[in-house]
Image 1 (cartoon, helix red, strand yellow):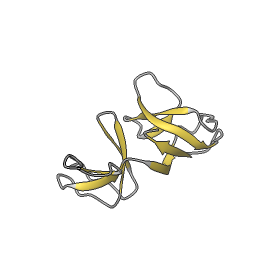
Image 2: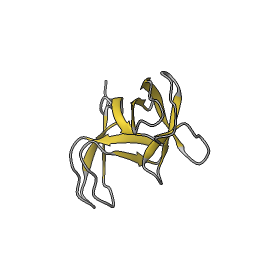
Image 3: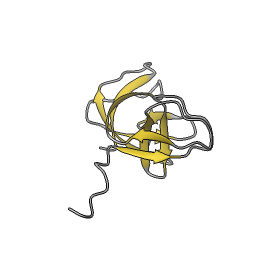
Image 4: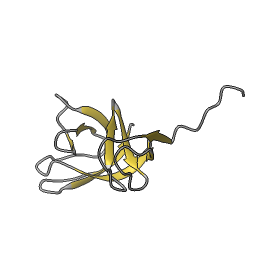
Length: 107
């Protein structure tokens, strides 16, 4: 087919600040995870789908399948929708006071 561009599992982007390998980055309403370290103002690649262990608000209690949001100020997953961006679904439950959660991003 002539209009195929790519499978959509990765995206190229240019961050204004350095990004560590495995770090989540919000591109408008799309949460991506950096494949490798990316220097500031240098093009790199992020993964747009899959399950990733991401930092979470330690006091949140998250159940499997729950919708979760990215707090771009705190750089963490939270259950609070207000002021945050939908990030995906919880893949493995995470209790209080855990600091990370498995998330199927953009689901």
